[in-house]
Length: 222
Image 1 (tube, rainbow, N blue to C red):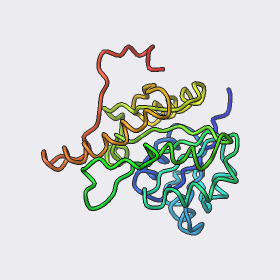
Image 2: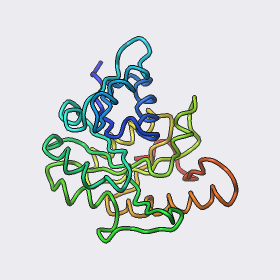
Image 3: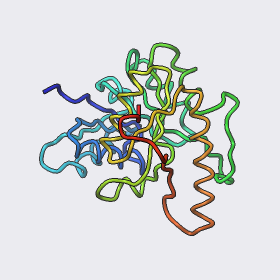
């Protein structure tokens, strides 16, 4: 049986990052939590571990260097700084950008950056050395922190079909359903939709509105 890739979750001590880390660890993936503080990452990893010690913690760059796949789950305000911090450690690797360009105080209003999306910013900063993919924008951390499967689809975007398929597998392993959303430029649609979903949550007084693609046979997710 082929060993599962090691996943570094940069921002793994935050709400979304820790939720994804828990689900992937439960699915059998070795996890490294990345944080600006190595001590904080190690403390959260210790809390997260059951008995197998499959979750460890380190600073952002060291976590990225030790992983096969790097997931970036940080606030938009620190997105560029974090991408530049891990850049030397991600050459040739799949980098999954989950970041949404939310600009307080109007986070329920779509405010895409001049580049077009956070994912395209990451691709510009990392260049062709990294295989940037984009996913997990429209599934709430609260749903991922709950037990069981999540009735929500995850759109996966990227210009590398093989890498997209790998991230779809990660979405499925997290208890969601991964759906191929096409090239990286299309990430703008999912990033913008997050603000729409935040507004829906507020207006309908619910927690964690998500999306579901209808009429899609399981065999055609990729």
